[in-house]
Image 1 (spheres, rainbow, N blue to C red):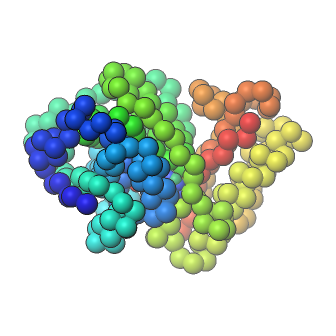
Image 2: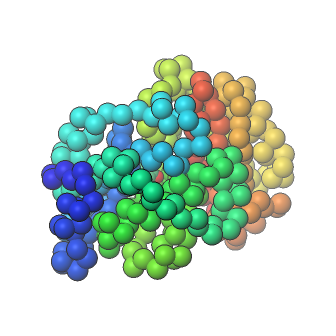
Image 3: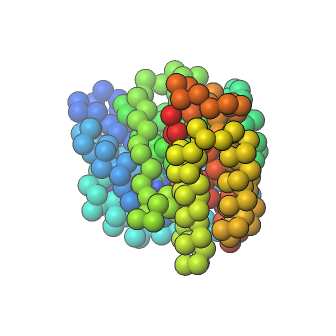
Length: 280
Ligand code: AMP
């Protein structure tokens, strides 16, 4: 695996069209786990070259302490990427990505920015677009691999691809879970063993919604999930959403023929966890 730290170096190597079998790209913030590695493996299968980036993007953190506490495990990450067969790691500094005076664009994301993650993490998706716009321009991949774990982020990045006119195919990969059902996340490293066990309640809630949405009203379902999460040890809940999987607008009544997704964001032990499940 070759590691590049500067934009001119990686750009010189990656010129679109030069790689016949295609370039696959997996953006990450590091502290890699099997969820990230599943994206690398998928890209490896479908492209001649796989590029991964590790960059903890300051502009997408609305909470400074969340940014400061974000786990950094660079040596382990490099070993995992080599083992997974990743070809290129892009590892830029903040100054490299945002040279002083860099103009931070504003993106028209519509309701994606006011609903759910957009509402509870003001400015987060603008930061995601700023860094992804920059990285997609630098790497110019043919295919981009993202995890369903960040459902709304996948929608935002697809919108960015459309807005910016990139010729890139987005593949959304299934969420990789611990045996317990807990969605793998770099943030899980900050949980105590006890909280990690309690955090399974998010997955349990999503399964419960999927299996029982037909038997009760959407509002009663959300109320009962709210109580269950708090009883299980969650300290606070940002949202429990049962919504249209394409627009993310709340649904009033469940209709099995409308694509529907359940999304949850909640805090446990001071750590904010998100998860989701398609329920029809
Ligand atoms: P992050 O490092 O958290 O920014 O995540 C980098 C990429 O890995 C994003 O596309 C995430 O959606 C994806 N990802 C994170 N956790 C998982 C998981 N448990 N399963 C599958 N993909 C994941």
